[in-house]
Length: 312
Image (cartoon, rainbow, N blue to C red):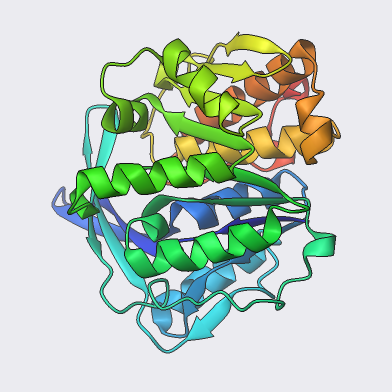
């Protein structure tokens, strides 16, 4: 099984009523839940780790996960309210206003020995859970326990509007990067953390500090990756008619992990030995899934049966 650990919330997405007035439509989201759903829809045994409310929105989240065959045995249900995020789309970027005080996600606690790590191949972490001190500490404790035998995947998925001390946050993200086998981030996240530093200059540092694979996604310009053995690889993003880009990065991450799982390259040593051709195949598949997600509203990653036969 692959696990995704972190945020699960309700996005309120911009929409219009029948008479043309502005409106907001609730949809299940949260980067780490999106990634769990994306992997499960690609037929990978997947579980979610994190806090889910028992309120109305929490039930929406749990039902949505179950409908995509995400295993919730390691999720913690509580009567704390669900996190709410209000989205505003500007150009190709989506900005969020979060309501996340004393929520089920914020109050999640890692229960040591509650997860059978011998059954887990990969743990993914990232996003809003890593912004607040408590969430980051609990996630780090989980990763420290898991990384002895489990591949660790990280996508910072930075949310600058939630960060109150950028330098402390950057230091925290670098700590998580050093714990990870796979470090993926968008070009926007890279710029937030590393400014104008060229990707190719930072990637060797991340690799030397422990990662086997570093990936930067660049929207409709595809993705570039660096690997200790396979070298540098680029993959193009197919041209599509974009509805919105919500969840595209999560879909990429889910599809990349699903592809590595399908190739038998998700376990740490097998990942270290991946070939350039295999890595190119995984990245190309991830780009196709991300592009597919952009063709419909919200974070709605594809199911295997929805993808063209030649996607893989």
